[in-house]
Image 1 (cartoon, one colour):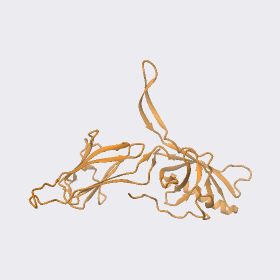
Image 2 (image 1 turned 45 degrees about the vertical axis):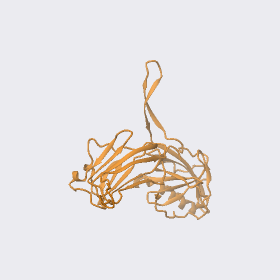
Image 3 (image 1 turned 90 degrees about the vertical axis):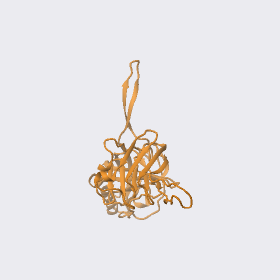
Image 4 (image 1 turned 180 degrees about the vertical axis):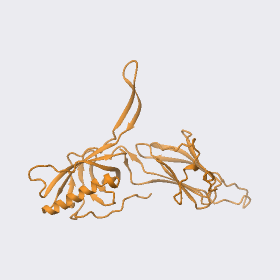
Length: 320
């Protein structure tokens, strides 16, 4: 399975150093890094870098917040109608220092720019890695806190900022992608060496396991040849159909690819053209995968050697 990472570059004036994990509330010993919108990676738990997280005061790494919609019951109490996940806020107390005033100021300014540029250039990524090598990440936008302590003696060669980072999606994402590949076998001669049948329609029923805590919305890549592609979730009956002829293309030829994203809905041919009209609206349901096991079926009419379906997703979790 591929590992999705941002390009790693060295931030300015780090001062070098080791990368010693420090204890963080809620998760024990861990290593934290922040990737800004330019792809520069900033270590947050390496005191030799010239800055590091203070363990006391870190919050927002636990379960996502929810807004509950309830209906009052005639005999008292209430019934839960819906639980809506809300954006989360993560608080990171960050201590910055230098051997001289100007070294401290350069680091302070560089870190302030790295976080506040998320307000102009898009979200950054906070990643928490555990000692076993696993990690989870979340997209963050700077909200407030890069101000310093305003105490006597601070701001000369060191200071602390208590950052609040806003997360539009409150769930943590595993950077390791789960991939499922199904491909049509080689067609056999009906009479040689004995009568046989090769399916030109069904790649088959597939069991997909979502190891995360919450529903994920997968991406599908279809490789031709195929004339009509149907994706069905067996437990609910939800399905959607991709018909290449609906956008004037004709059947998918061998090697041609179409990518379907389920959240937000998007259909792209291999040249980037918009194929959303190829879905069977209004009946199409771009279904997600709940936690645990889901039985699905991929059906490709007009399939042949090389026909394939690839399903990919990144598990999502409540906590870091």
